[in-house]
Image (tube, rainbow, N blue to C red; front, side, top):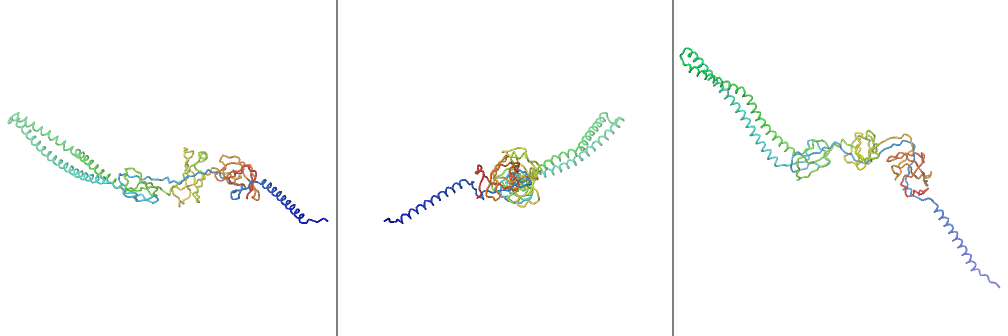
Length: 417
């Protein structure tokens, strides 16, 4: 009689079922693996920012960085040598023309001034004495001239009388001739005295001019030393804001040393550095936008430097508008200089890592759902710092990834996670 082995049969069936399940799972995993392996590469959505191709105006502009500068800068120097006693201002102080920036001291100048004043007093006394002596000499010449005139008149009378007496043979011929000779001598004395008297005003004027010149020189010496002492208080000489103070207390400075710099903050310009390639496009009169942090103001190109330094060209841009609130020298600025405008063309924000001289580019165009992107060839036209002109490969309304996609350059398609 056969006996049925029920337990062994059930165990075999269970093993068969498990083996079938395992085989099915393995096949499923292989299928999933093949499917995953065939999927496009993925990129996180926060790393794949995008932009829309639009039909509209394209502004071709050159971007350059620089600073605000104040063209009106006064370098304040000292005229007198001395030692810095006090510094009365700091950078940022608003000053007027007569405001004192620095006080100097110089004992030598004080001694020199005292000596010059003493010499001036002596020169003034000499000048007064010279005038008194000249007046006395004039009076003496008058007295002398009057005496000589009297002597001549007497001698002439005597000569005339002896001539008459000699004609009557009352006096000798010798006495008569002696009287005539004496009268002629007195006449020559009189002529000389008159000539000297007549030249006295010119002689006196010349002597006074010499004395006056010496006196004036002494006065100039005193005035010069007084100015030098007054210049020990170094004044701004200009209304503006102190930009730098270049000396410190206790320092000895020679005449002509730079003490400080004062700028006019109301007159500011932007001075930027443009690449030598872009500088060929920049011209005086072109419009510009100046960005300083969150603030943007208009401007206009006023100067393009003709020389190149370190492959950069300096360009000055005048600030538009009247509001200068918050602006100061050395403030960083980015200038966007407008070169040209295209009224109706395809434009998109500039993709990252796109070279300036690129004419062809491969960009990833997003599908309608924004979950997949396909690589397309795009023809590039003109480029500015923020936008590029699209000549082919895209149409208005397309969205393309603007992030740097160099890592996925060989992928024909990518997923956006």
